[in-house]
Image (tube, one colour):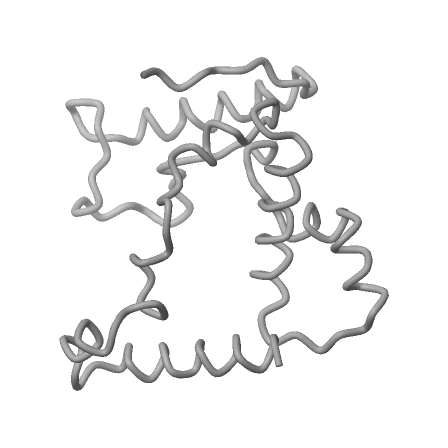
Length: 149
């Protein structure tokens, strides 16, 4: 199954700027035309660019009706950026469904969050014994709990 490509409504000069950046990045690649993470890159080398219109941003979540309600409520959230991103994703999927610009992206997301360490079982977490990651997972779980209680 192929990913659907769509026409974007952006100023031609913006597309030209992005194309120049991509060409510049390609010109700085190795002899076979590929860039690899094991090759040291000079400072300020563009190795990948994503058009802004392809990003889901915090501001998009804030502009939804739910996001506006949260902003007006003056809630003190520990991870507001994550919450606004999730709000946009859920709102857009509900409101726009398959017509959403981001629908192809939504279709490739994992069906569960089991791949995220904050949802791992104790047995899985035991494999990280001695790792600083366990402390970070505990901090994240505490922050999530604080946001929802």
